[in-house]
Amino acid sequence: MSTDVLICGAGRTPFGRSEASGRQLAVGAVNAALADAGIEWSRVRAAFGGSDSAGLADTLVAQLGLTGVPFINVKNGCATGGSALVSAVNAIRSGMADVVLAVGFDKHPRGAFDPRPEDWGLGAEYGSDGLMVTTQFFGMKIQRYMYDHGITPRTLALVAEKAYRNGGLTPEAWRRKPVSAEEVLESGMVSDPLTRYMFCSPGAGAAALVLCSPEAARSLDGPPVALRSAAVRTRRFGSFEVFSPWIPGGQLTSVSRDASAAAFEEAGIGPGDVDVCQLQDTESGAEVMHMAECGFCEDGEQERLIASGVTEIGGTLPVNTDGGCIANGEPIGASGLRQVYEIVQQLRGRAGERQVPGEPRVGFTHVYGAPGVSACTVLSR
Amino acid sequence: MDGALIRMATDPRSPTVAVGLQGSCCSGCAVTAYPAEDACPRCGGPAEPAVLQGTGRLWTWTVQRYAPKSPPYQAPPGGFVPFALGYVELVEGVRVAAVLEVDDLDDVRIGMPLTVTAGHGVPRARPTTPGEEGS
Ligand SMILES: [Zn+2]
View 1 (cartoon, each protein chain N blue to C red):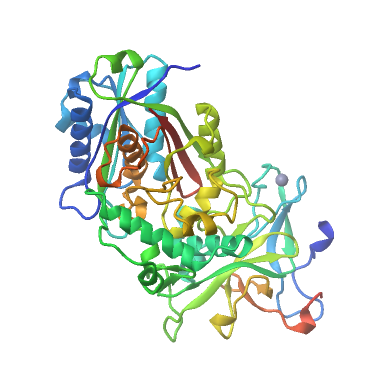
View 2: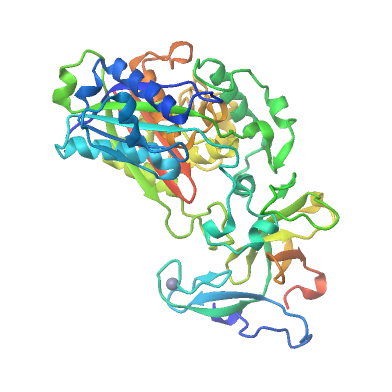
């Protein structure tokens, strides 16, 4: 068995629109995580972090302190936070360092998500003819899933309704006003069957974690949470991804399925043991499909599970207790660590109004993004 | 699998009209791709050019309800109108992204028979007329 890795500090900023720069947000999250762990920056022996479009993490030393710490930049799209976390875990297990920082942050300038066909290896006609729109992919993936597995538009609306309700319980969330399922359904079709309020928006924000070896954790006061596993995977042949001129026939493969299975195997824990989880919800359909892809239910069971409140904070499998991406927005580099922050709060019993009852012991996080990458973690107390 | 591929660029019945799609097929694992790839995306082996028939059924779809950002999008001369798009599962097994040319967006259904053609721009699919079916 490899060395345990413990999360001793977690911090985040509010997400949404911000006057602050992405780097300023990152410094805020790092200082919050250090304070949570009860340590000074000078105690950190290695750092990993990054953003998608808000600058280089290693330049944060100018604000945090020039201690000489090795600070390694990570740039891995939606898996930036997850990849920083995997690197931090490996730094501890290898003996490189006993106290390690992982930080993710972002602030997306207007047009940050305007893809160019040539950057994706596609002919110019895919752009000029209007097929380079990310929402189309999300609409088409859940459209087929609903056809195959009997999911209704009302279920998609219930997912969004829950996200806004949980966002209202989360002080740092962006969207905090309740929105009813009816309002979600009537908010205007964007890419059938997905409506406007079913989508998350790009935003600004940062999250940071302090990870420790067991020896280093013993010298700190707070209740640590064990990071049982962290796994990152890229897609295999046969998956359905954004901006694909074609996809292979037959059963789809899923990088989320692969990454979650790897995380559960490494942790020696199964989806049935999880008390609270965070699943990538770029839009409502993603949360529905990821419940099955990450092993929490069979395809099609979501229709019944969601209607009966299983994924609510008081349910047997609370999903996205902080409102997820739909209520927090998606600063790409920060999203994965925001999820881990939330699970850490839940497992410590410090989640305030949104605390899952019954003292949850095991948590799970999952991010997914283009062009077919997923990062998952399993945590326990 | 090979028999499903017509290895000619034009339909002999109407030689002036290009039919089918210029795809590729791996000789090793029979993976069909569109647009054509030099190497098989599954096994990395060489892929041979292959013309795909273009007939199939709608596998999934959505509607683009608002004008995509321009550039890169170029609205048609009459201005943007919402359009349907989807993936058509061809008889060769590959699912090809295409704009759906349907008279009424409310008529789009998974499983509907479609014929995909390639000309200027992205592939376009229109409902297969009864005479074309099974050809
Ligand atoms: Zn091959």
